[in-house]
Image 1 (cartoon, rainbow, N blue to C red):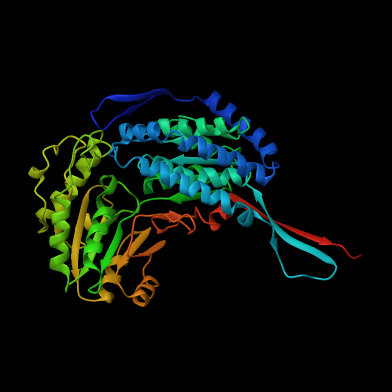
Image 2 (cartoon, rainbow, N blue to C red):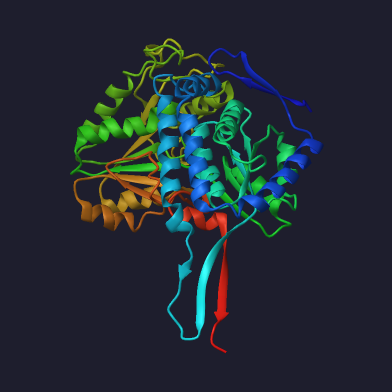
Length: 463
């Protein structure tokens, strides 16, 4: 097994970053530092923790141009869009900092004569965050910042595709003056990661990644009574009703499906459209998708970059090919995208119709620039099809009828229900999934609950 991490840029297949992987001794030492640092950090006043993390966010945002370029070179997102991730990081971090006093404050209970009673939120200890490459900062910030605010120490293991993102976290925290050992980033192998999860010194694991990865995390932690937050895959649906503002729906469903080359756990991967507006929706969607420019993400005119690696693109090509062989119709000619080439990460976007749920493209997570569209005749049919999935991260409805949106949303099996928008995490709302999309919750005041444990104080004052 190699003891070196190599980040292969999807732009041109070159080695962009190379780092040594931490060995067992280094990992044990880092964990010991985290445990020692956390013992003091938990008693640091919350206002001081807020001030330090605010400084860290300021330091991070000041590096936006450099960070944006690194995102693009590591995972292929067009440079024109990469700065939005820095902005999203800032939005989420500042929100979680702002709500920390209320979210972490003591919980009062009804008064009782002769007693003082309340519930306090204690930090867990050491939180181990395992982050993915597709949104390398937006996924990690959901756990890293609130975990630190709650008084935990954090160890971060980032994807081998985005190692510089872990280092940017460490750089920002160091610039802010965070005490040594409170936050540490380590480049680790999968085997070392599993061993650390199983280690007695780790008190919680926050994992974002694939369903198989989630099972591996659970297996590694199975012999210990620790919590694990699992944000896993998605096959998120959109339902376009007959009363939708169609131009708005087309523009935003397309963006939700193809932004970041479709490499988003909460991106739209399947659409159900009322028969009354189906033809118009399909025509508008295909027309808009044909306008994407696939190419080098460092170039200003590129609106669709490569997928993260050639194997990921081949997986989606296989889904499209299988669907076409089963009777689906593809509406976008790959010849209109000269950069598209088999065996490379460059994949043309695709829209498919005449699809059904017997096809992989409508059931299996694609994580790529492909969208299947089905015609439906009623809300009931749309609900049934949206729920016919192993996943349940987000779902969206496109309508002008808020009452209908609420009623339908109550029946859809999902963690987040959108109306007239998609593919966005509001930091004031709980980020969670159902079924194979995982368990646990991040963001919002509820997100602090899995990063702390309740401790009840029952004081008898009248004797």
